[in-house]
Image (cartoon, rainbow, N blue to C red; front, side, top):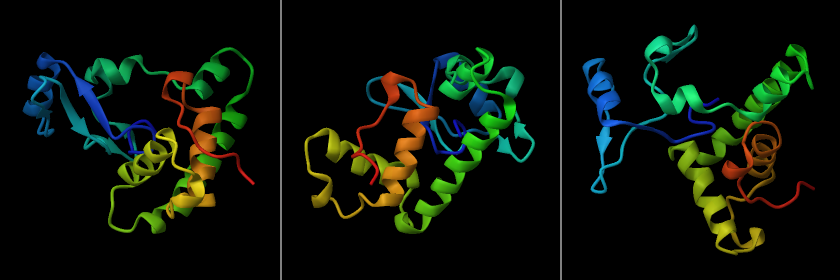
Length: 155
């Protein structure tokens, strides 16, 4: 889910990584502030996984989700980890139709940004139970505290 636009909308890369990625045909954008990134879903993600795993960017190498942390610590087993993934992907699939043609990550960020700014959930039409469910599962099982999004409690 780190690579398919569920967790992140883009991957920040170094100047050197940008050169290597562009050579592989990945469109890297350089912003006015010098930041470089490429959009998710990752163009090298396939059904077989990461197509550039051995040479993936540092950002990809360094992020470890909370489910992987729990699995490595022995707090859950592989079956429980897979159940978390399956349930979260099902929640994502339930939300996709609501976003329409809008990028799902951007759609969700628009809502969570409004919530962060103090707008009540009832005033945001896109703050649906499906969106709250997906964000709640991502916060609970995958995001580290510094990536958690503000959403109302599930009913």
